[in-house]
Length: 261
Length: 122
Image 1 (spheres, rainbow over the protein chains, first blue to last red):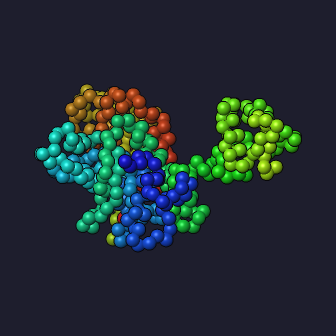
Image 2 (cartoon, one colour):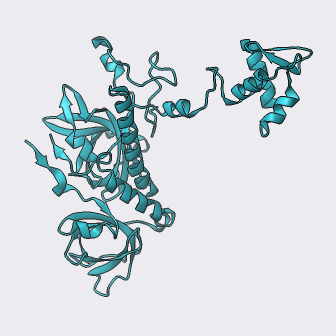
C-alpha cells in the first residue's frame, strides 16, 4: 500500500510524470488534502520535536515534515483495544510519542490483531507528524520490528543523504521542493541529443546517424560498435527508432539511415 | 520558549569520539566481552576497535556477549556508567557490519546539520 523507504509516493494520480516533482507549487485550497504527503522523509526524533508548526503543517527548516520514517528503541508500550501507544527513542532527543491505531477489540480474532512490540527492542516507524494538546507525536501507520541492526546504520545514512539532497535541490531552484528518487535516474542518465530514448536506443541512433554511406549502417555494424549489447536488443532499438521516424530502412531490413543526418 | 534538548540526547559515539563527551550521555554500540566476576562491569569493544569499560549500576542478570548497545554517562576516565543496555541475539550480532556503522557514526557526527541531534526547540 505505502511506498516503504522511497522518497516519493507515485500513487497520486495526475500530478507527476516519473521525472516530475512531488508537490506542485501554487495549488488550490480545495485540493489541499490531496497535495499533501507525497513523500516519506527519513528523519530523527529531534528533528520532529524541533520542527516549526504553521497551521497543521510542520517544517524542519525548508523541508515539510508530513510522512516520516524513524528507527528507534521502544522505551515504553501501553495497550488498549483501539490503540497502542509507544515511546520511541532514537538517541537524538527525548522519547517521541508514537500512536498506532488498531482494532484489537475482543471480538476480533487473535490472529488478526496487531501485536504490541516489546520494550527495549528496535523498531522502524512509518507515520505522520501530528500535534495534540500542544504535544507533538507521530501517528504510525506501520511499525516493523528491526530484525537486522544494519537497518540502524542504513537509517543514519539515509537521513543524512536525503537531507543533503533536499538542501542541494532547494539551493539550486530557490524554492523548497521534495526530491524524488526518480530524479536521480533521469538526471544521471546521458540522454544524448534526442529525448525520450533510452540509453541503447540513443547509442544505436547515434551510430546510424554518423554513417554517411548511401546504404546506411548495417545491424551487424551497429552490434560490432556497441560491443556488449546483444543483437536482439539492437534490433528492438532499431524497430523502435524506425516506428518513431528517427531512422528508415534502405537496401534491406538490415540497413538503416537516420532521418535527421 | 527555547528549550535545549541536548540533555536528552545520547549521541552515537565510537572510541575516538568518546573523550569529547565526558560528563554527557552517549550511546555506544559494540561487542561485549570480559564480564567481571561480580557482573558489575564489562568491556565493550567499540566500532573503531577500542576497549571501553562499562560500569553497571546493578550487577548484570545475564551474561552479555556479542553485539551490545550501552546507554550511559561518560566519566573523566572515559568509562561509561550504564543506565540501560540492549543485548542482541547471535543472529543479529553475526550479521552486523561494525565497520559500516563506524563510518555512519563519524559521518552523522560530522554532518549534524543533516542528521539532527538535540536541536533547540522553537
